[in-house]
Amino acid sequence: MTDISVGESTIEGYINGDSVSIHFGSAEYLLDSMNLAGLLSPDSSRINYQADDAIIDIASNFDLLASQEMLQAWAKNVLNSPDSLMQAAGTRALSIDLQLTSPGIFHVLGMDVTDFDTLFVSGAIDEQKQTADLIASTGHFKGYGISLDSFYTSRCKWA
Picture: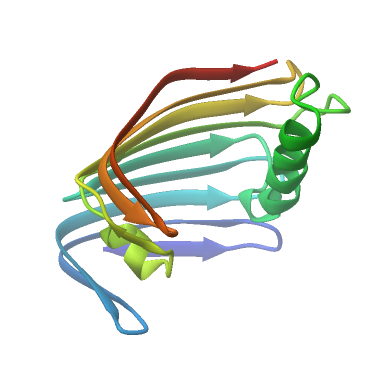
């Protein structure tokens, strides 16, 4: 079942299916079942994805399509001045929760992640509080020229 609404500045919809096949170039992503619900708008965004090998929840109080600018500025500030995560306090907030047991979703998105057993990421960025929080772990990760037997961080917090 699919229902997608496209407004002047909003995209909202859901896709629900069994025996799903997604193709991206030569990559093929096969699923027994998949449920995707999402909203992209200037004031808020949310993505909820559940499939055989993945649970992904992303929520923000801004348009995720415009998030590249925010994340690039955030990364630059962390690398150049880790004592001041965000230079100017805004009001944007983002939370993310990923629970993956295979890299299939990354393959279909064209990302350079070859393999892993598990990948768990939970985090949040809050401009108003000027904080960012990250918890992550993975097993047997191969991608972006990196190979790790295991990786775990219990908490990375910047404020």
